[in-house]
Image 1 (cartoon, rainbow, N blue to C red):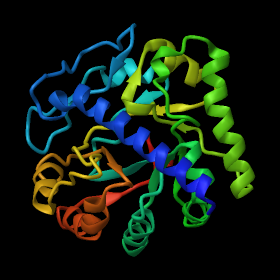
Image 2 (cartoon, helix red, strand yellow; image 1 turned 180 degrees about the vertical axis):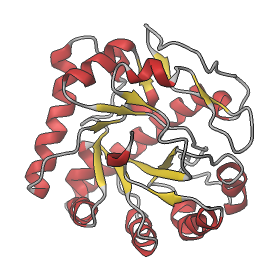
Image 3 (cartoon, rainbow, N blue to C red; image 1 turned 30 degrees about the horizontal axis):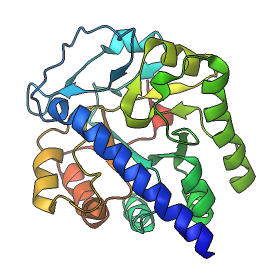
Length: 272
């Protein structure tokens, strides 16, 4: 890799990390139960940040939009809550040296996952992207540049962010990108959901996540388990970040613990 490319990648990594930190400040209270969400909440008309409220251990949380309201826009944050099933998803902004270890753990458990990628990840780690596809994982659209999509009101501009990534992915793998979309930072609006739906996408939020995105302040395995084990629930769509050293280190053990609790893993393609 040339010096210029390395500098570009480091710059993107720094900017992406700052973006995640900003998102963390906005979303942390909701994920840590300080800001409860109503189970009957309607989809916000104006821009909003996806958030959760865990009210009963082992049960699905309430989102800041309801399952039925999201469904009318082909969007979801929960899977099949009648089964002990987990849908694993990873947000991938840039390669931080841990994705292959994550893929190894998934392969060991025969666990399908979805990787929501951005343009930089595809450009700088094409072999890893091709491995994701070859091993049967869903590769989803996290936009090309990772902007705040809720600030984009024009369908043409929204479409360009998604279709630019589609083109790059096809060029890299020879395959079409899947029609699953996750808004960067979880920022969205009704208009965004309509825009994605018009392009044939299913918008996928999440029902379980924890603060794993501070690259230089990673949680301990014990801290990760304290969030991910008690809060797991039937039909969980789990969000993890592939840049997390902790996630890479614990994933094999974490999947084993969930299996011991009676859960199995399914692809987003099996969502109801």
